[in-house]
Length: 217
Image (cartoon, rainbow, N blue to C red; front, side):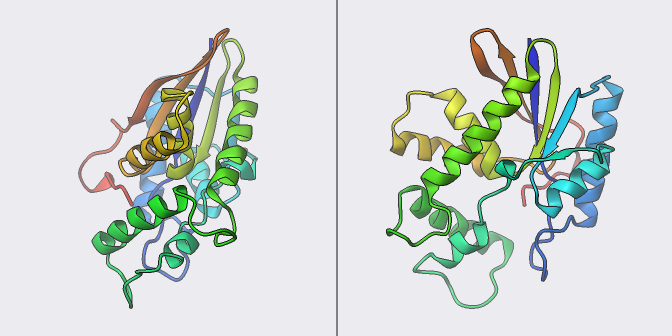
């Protein structure tokens, strides 16, 4: 039985000119996770990451700088989704207000929004995540360990599909929202891959984090 470890990137730089850069806390989260995995003798047979800078830097902090790039693991463009929200408050948003608007805006996105409104519609995001997930599961195979460094929205989509493969569109979107809002930076979600397919084993593990090292955004 193979294992696929889904790693959410470390904390990015909220409120700066370039969000797609790890904060100092994000780098430390990656180093802590890498050490935690090594202490448990987790030696991946393959490592894949999204094409975003925060994915690359997280892999580097973990000591996995030779990761292959698959942009199917990239996060959706959350800033454009938020910007498309019709009731967006003016000015800069603090973390609490941004989270409130983010949840409303993503609920609208997953609900379909208006035709042609989004650069990447929700169904397109779902399909590309599913393709990259299926490819990683094939690589895991029997007895192999694959690590995928990605983002919260991607991990949430994988988990929603695994928890309820027969879910209708509204249920899937609701599950996705529930998973997406609680994912911890640098957390690990484990998927086992066997003869009957992929199954969710654990969600959002973060025993390597404590105190100020534990962040959600």
